[in-house]
Image (cartoon, rainbow, N blue to C red; front, side, top):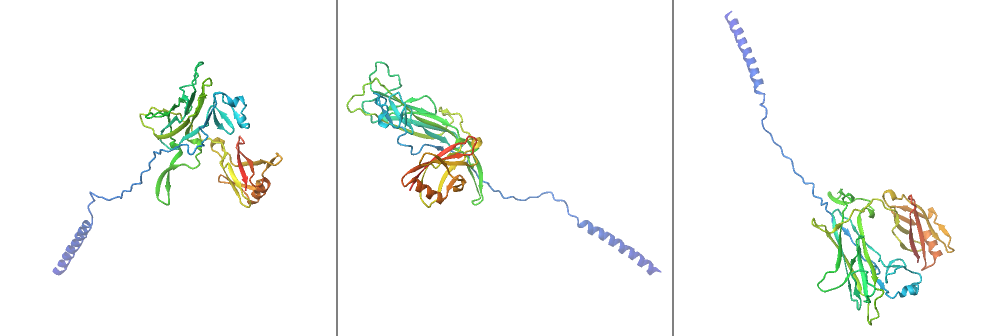
Length: 368
């Protein structure tokens, strides 16, 4: 009996111990919440793209005739009705003639163009002076006076439609006369690009930007002479005029007149290859520009040419194709045309675009 009681008590004690042990084990497995933490992240610099583009397109290799002139104070050209070149038009009344167009002579020269193809504003300076003349005095203006018999020549430098500046003769230690204007850059014509091959960014001109989408200006010369002056001196020679141009980034304190923006996204179509050779058995490529904006064409409407009798012929659509700014004429057509024209002879073709204005352009070929 006593043993039974002892066993019951021992069982109860063991049971209680197990319960307490289990409770203790459960409590020991719980972890206290973290009060701190940290991690790291690698830094990577995406790079820098310079968006300040200074790029001004200046005239390069202009024709030698651009600023060449003829001094005719006695009106010999007018008196002979232009006998020196009967096919030309002489329209000046100032005694000075510039070749301003094809077979056209006027008191104003042809002009040269400057275009800002960057994003920042630039100042462009055009300068001019005369050299090597003998017996001719450079005039300050065209008011020669009724009684003035001096052999005077006036040349005016005209920049961006501003008032002309009188060109002076070269003098040692003296800078040529000049005119400076500010030309605005166009940021909208550029964009950031990513190159998959190089894994680099660049800031470059957008695709398809027409020349008209940049700000530009033109400059040239105008001339006159004292037609009451005495130009009879022995050894008298007309001076040579030298015109130079340059540009620099526009400074914050620049005093040069900043021209109004004249860029436009509208550009008429045009033929950009104006001369080419016709070689029998070879295809002929003629580059064209379909234009941009509201003036843009979508293709070629027709190509025509005058035949030997003067009648207008139309080139069949099957004889050429257009793609990516290029008209390609087949070798068979080229051979036929070269034969018809004759070796060494030329023929001019007119391309009519399908824009709303039916804009035309021409190119001239020489048969080989």
